[in-house]
Length: 333
Image 1 (cartoon, rainbow, N blue to C red):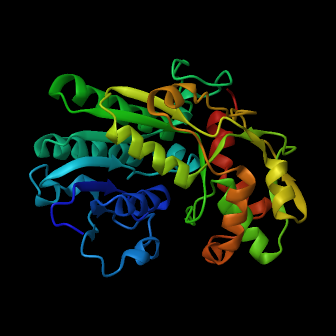
Image 2: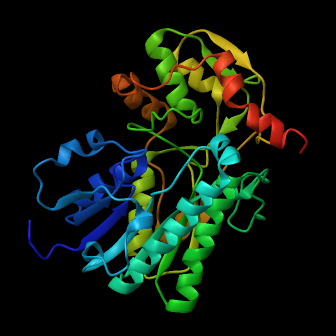
């Protein structure tokens, strides 16, 4: 590969979505620099690039990196995935979420500005919409209901402020429900796939919230990476795109595909019955369309089931304890 390959910086690049972004960029001939403090990511997500001199990992916290750091030298595009996820912990630790997801984003924006990057693509969250009308367009009112959603939205607003004031070319993708191989296995109670796949390994019943009829707009991670790449290559900037499959699936459908027993846990207040991205804007602007069906995505994850062997095993009691702050603070909404 040529030494003059374009340089891309992927923050959170050892994490779930970020590592798939690294894979795609390598495939497309980029030199890739990864920033990840490994608080949520894993080196194993990058092991396929061991020995590749054009992929490097910097294990610092994004908040500690100065804009003049050589890490940003000659960077043409920044894909910003780094940050803290999970809803419930954000209710307990809002200051940390604001610090990492807002101030950390500002640090990366400054680095991109000093580098003269051609594009900064921000990984935003559809949680900013709150209990939204569906299908949800980019013009839907923003109404974040908890600190995680607010922190991601404020990070997005910072990115567009850097576009307006400093002329940094910025685009943002509001991710709906990403799923796929390498999805996180952290100790926090969160995404349904990590919970269910660990339960499948142990033969434990699936802890289905409510009646399981709530539906989510699951988009497979490789399709998501292609959307981010397209957002980096377009001449358009200062754009927001919703990215899902536009085809919501009920949680009960996931249970059906995985197979096994179910135990129901209480529905949490303020959670939507349906998330559903209107993806007509990104289809029109970037000619992007999802390629991986929900069933195919689940099949790929089951083929890699051992990945979730070290994930926490949740049951009704541990979930009740973990989600107590949710009911305490959001139960009156």
